[in-house]
Length: 180
Length: 173
Image (cartoon, rainbow over all chains, first blue to last red; front, side):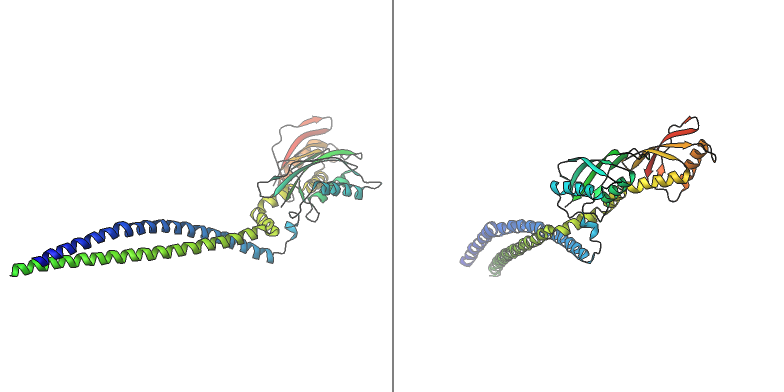
């Protein structure tokens, strides 16, 4: 009878000990595990994203090394400042002007540079030029939009009389310059 | 005697069961602690890996040529289109070419939003009457394989003595 009573006490003690461990150790470890699993999922996703980003950049780097068309991006690599651009236009005007051909820069208006929707910096420049004939105009337009020029401009709109006159005329050329 | 034995046995079984349950709870708890430690270690490694990769990405993004190349590749079609639409000189030359080919005269040149507007004049001469030149130009240019533009429908045409005049809008192909 005494042995049975003794066993009951042991049973109760073990039961209480089990409950104590469950409540004060197992439960907190379980909650901690869930929290750590959440963090683990987030971290794994973060690493996966950055690895994808890094891989695409590395692939681009490799492509760039084997790419032969450097001149296609050369004109985006410029860091234009106003004084350089002013000099660029006036130098050209000086260079081509002679007894038969003339180009005078009447006015240059710069806009505030902003980020374009393509991701490049964008500067709008409005040029007002007076030219002696159509050939001069053609040569100037070629210079402005050539990949081989120091600056490569885009021209969104343009108007001129086109009446085969042999006298001077003044035209406005809106220019867009995209750069890094 | 046998009843006593049976009660004792039953009591002993329940004691063994309690003990087994305690052992299982202890094993589960130890495993949970070990697993949490392992997860902490893995998370630390992931954090470190993320920081390292982020540094590499930032370094690569700092390379200007790569940055420009990346933007160029992403926007290549738009940039090519912008280049094409900026070829004002080739549009002017094209008008001269059409003018010589179809005996028409273009006055005024206004280009905006991929559209070129101009005024066309046709003049009667010994070869053709003005309206014949007009009709031939409008009919043949549409079939011309070298044409840079499509012609938008003409809204009006006027005749004065031996001249015809109308406005025309070309849309870049």
